[in-house]
Amino acid sequence: MTENKIRSFTDLNAWKEGHKLVLMIYRTTEHFPGREMFALINQMRRCVISITSNIAEGFSRGTNNDKCQFYTTAQGSLTELQNQLLIARDIGYIRQEEFQTLANQTITTNKLLNGLKRIRNTSYKIQDTQQ
Image (cartoon, rainbow, N blue to C red):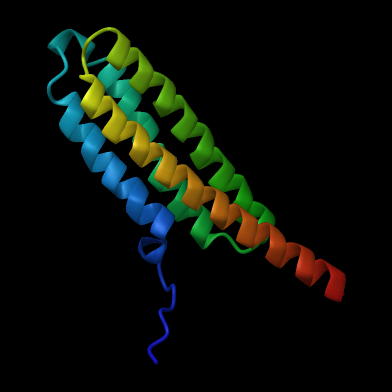
């Protein structure tokens, strides 16, 4: 039986799904009006990049508390992006179907981030009680 070892942040499912979200947001915002280049487009792209960047940085941290801090920051950026998607939908930049696809991807990414945090917190508690 081949064991799947996580050797890099790119092996994390949360990062993989977050990366899909990055690509989706970049493709979606390409069609926004040019006047949004330094407003909503910039904000959405910065948020989505922050999600995967914080997952990557958290992965490289040595302690579980540090890892969880970065995964929590990634979730904050994800929530900010969810708000911006609502705005984009409500002002007519995104059709309802496209919004739903993007919203579903944010939910998937969020669930995986919750899983990463849960694993780290459980691991930390186990190590804590063994000392």
